[in-house]
Length: 380
Image (cartoon, rainbow, N blue to C red; front, top):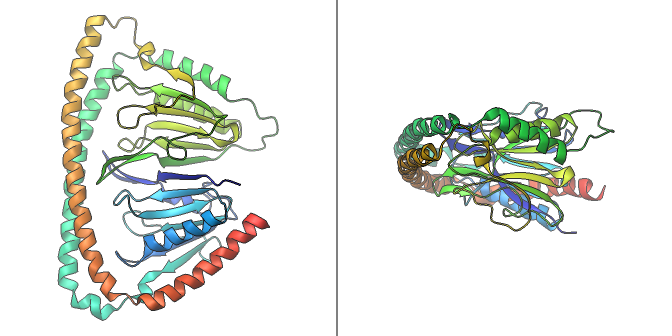
């Protein structure tokens, strides 16, 4: 048995601020099986949240479970969570900026409070330094979001240039034909499928980080992969929306991956039950594999009235907008890097305040409890 390990984000620093899909992990959202055991970790920086999550991920991997690693957009080397349908377990960092509170505490969600293991006296001793670092970190995030908001204005301007040249009726009709071809009726379906939202790529301190969905951006042999080769920044989100809606209406669970900068725009769709994916390839996340079943070229949706000279003009306008957009993104990346540095400095004080011996004993107890949950789900 070979387990599949994939990575995704449930939060990203977008053109409209931080966007989170973390609440989708809770009971009633449909992301997790109702029988799933969800553990929400609370605690400050440097208290061991990511380390604990990595231990759970390792335990799941050793049990040959399929695993979804939830990356942290603030620090891509850290984990914000791990979830496994086969293991029947989800463990997630429930602190800001993606604070999560349980829906049915103790029934479906459990709280792990790592703050029980720090010394308040030590933290109070460093209170002034921690408060100053926290304020500096907050200011850097504010600066980053100002740059991202400015980039969003250029993004909207660029979209306006493009959209005036696109025949969206033609695009939607094509989307309906592709949806009919890809998604068969499901006679035994008794309910709608579940939509699972995520980001395949996110705006982070490391830049635009991530790739298309799948294990390392690669889909296994036997999958049907449709690739939208996005040129001139033409968005084919209407096609993706149509395909996703049909899949869900036919009873198929569907993973919808949104743009890490524009959280309202779908970029990729994965329908596991059908071994089918529709991905968008552009300069920020290229898909250069040889297993493409269908390539969709957005240029085919230009209005007939768009002349060659207009295309050249549009290319020029978009090229100039891209230069400005990327420059503002780069400034946002640098501000996020500074925020990360202040965060790491804050961690040092919390690390000093932690009673790691007691914490490790508690972690071992919780890992043993989770191991029982995994064994029960894997072996029955």
